[in-house]
Image (tube, rainbow, N blue to C red):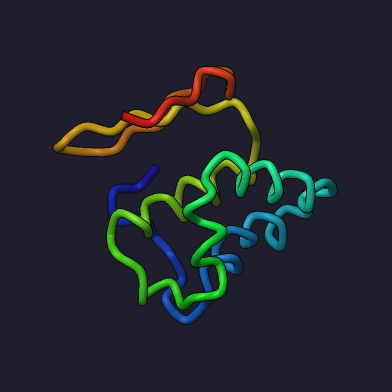
Length: 96
């Protein structure tokens, strides 16, 4: 995941998450969005806010949610210097 988050500042949080749906046409996007909101409930709380009105950490969660919209086989690793996304089964997802 890019360190700068690459969110569209003029869009709401949920619209940023759904960008992949509009770009490549994901057929089961409603189920994936529900899965993401269940996995990262913080994102659901601010889904209607403009992307620029949330904190940097919250923006990273939105970027992660957008990445997860593409598929469910990712592992999210955070450290003080950077955020990395590795390809592993979603059951391995943990937040440190």
